[in-house]
Amino acid sequence: MSVGRRITLLAVGIVAGLTAAAVMILIMAAARTWLGISPPPEAVPDRLAPTLSIEKFFSLFGQYGGYNGLKQFGIKVGISALVGAGVLFGLLYALVASSARGKNAPRWPGGVSRFGAIFLIGAASVLWLGSMILLWPVLASNFRGLPPSQARWVSSIALMIEYALFGATLAFTFHKIAPDNVLLQSTDGVSDVNEKLPSFGRTVGRRAILATVATALISAPSFGLIRRLYNRATFDYDGRPYSGPGVKPIAPNDQFYTVTKNVVDPNISKRVWALEITGKVDSPKTYDFDQLVSLGAIEQETTLMCISNTIGAGLFSNAVWTGVPMAALLTASGVSPDAVEVKLHAADGYTDTFAIEKALDPTTMVVYLMNGDPLPERHGYPARVIVPGLFGEKNVKWVTGIEVIDYDGQGFYEQQGWGPSFVIPTRSDIFAPQWRRGSKGDAFVDPFNRNRVATIKGRAFGGNRGIRTVEVSVDGGESWNPATIDYPGTRLTWTFWSYRWTPTTAGDIVVLSRAVDGEGGAQSSEKRGIVAQGATGYHKVTAHVL
Ligand SMILES: Nc1nc2c(c(=O)[nH]1)N[C@H]1C(S)=C(S)[C@@H](COP(=O)(O)O)O[C@H]1N2
Ligand SMILES: [Mo]
Image 1 (cartoon, protein in one colour):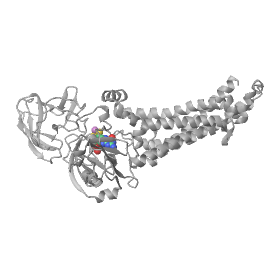
Image 2 (cartoon, protein in one colour):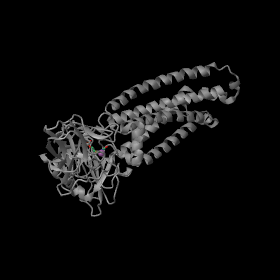
Image 3 (cartoon, protein in one colour):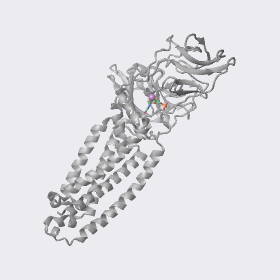
Image 4 (cartoon, helix red, strand yellow):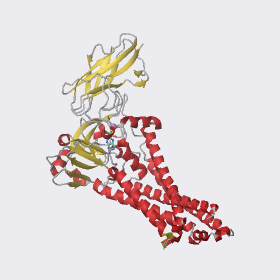
């Protein structure tokens, strides 16, 4: 075969590969949009994220502009990889199909050479099996809310269909552009020398252009779907704090702090959503939404805080939740005496674990209302777990499964090395007047005036131990004065406090607070970062007194 023709056939392979990639991407985008099936560009990062160490995780944040930058990068790499796979398999297929065996093999419908087809079926099967093994833990996710046992099947079959369509489109397109009379022409060397084959380049060229146009047409709706998903992406609300002088004891739903691992959060359909109780129980059960609601409605005010909340920051909010105690669900299924923990599964593939004793505690709930309204999508619609006293990550949103396990399991973040304790240490901080975080620490924005009274306000939180007292120091921690409790909250919530201060000397003065929790435990003064068990230490804010 002449070099020119060989190159042309490779080019045909690339065109066919790109067409196949376009079809696969369209199917994946549609399956994600309407069926909530996570495509590999989303599933692979979800699978790998928990395997990173905390240090690696944070250094990647630094490299790619934070969690959001990293998420965007991951998706871009994923989509490029799909296109790259198109090019790679297109080239491989061109080599296989134009090899002596490929050309001489019997034909399948569409003129597909059996040898080529066997190659593609083999490659697709290997890729599918590889994907099943690699992605196994996240195949149980379904962003429309199918419970894990069903989601695993649906994800596996979807992957198989996606890969099969890719292979079929590739082979079909390749042979449409370079059909047998063209492909076989070059076997006898004679016609090769016999270079009166303007038709080869021209026919192939014309068909390749048609295939390229078809690829563009197939890609157009994918762009539309991907843009739609992108518009729902979490970039503008992941890591959103609730802080500043305006914070209220009960955070409005649309201002409650938000943290999510996802690029695009689940949009769950109540009709497909279900909650499975499985594992070490006598009788596994599945509840649909109405069945869950019919189990009862207990209201419980509870404060949530992210483990990544630095002292003074706002990944921290309080709401009134309504739902069912998890104990009711567990005892209805009969917990085995071997039970050690519950492992929670969510529609986004997120998992987390805590001790069975904690799961049976009457304050641990599966909730479906937040401040009286259905849970907002980003806070876990239609149902989430509330587990007072443990960091936010254990409060699994979009919950679809409660698995009782007889070992010490590790969830999404614990695998990275967070913990092992997720008990929220007692803390207190200042939210008013407005302060700003700078390189030299936190400082009030506006100066204070000597001999004029000012009100310092803050919050204190003792996990599920409540808050007994709060004290404020206006001399850098030398002496402490009791603060007034403005909103006591409950044992499961934060407390709001205030302190009226009349500065008497000019200069820079450090204001601090400290709390004692409801069990008499004093807030630790030891300065500790968020890694790996949450921050401790006093909140210090510098006041400039004129
Ligand atoms: N399914 C699921 N649940 C999740 C998360 C998640 O990414 N997926 N993030 C966790 C983390 S780290 C925190 S801090 C809280 C935040 O809950 P919020 O956004 O309702 O404030 O949800 C937790 N539950
Ligand atoms: Mo978190």
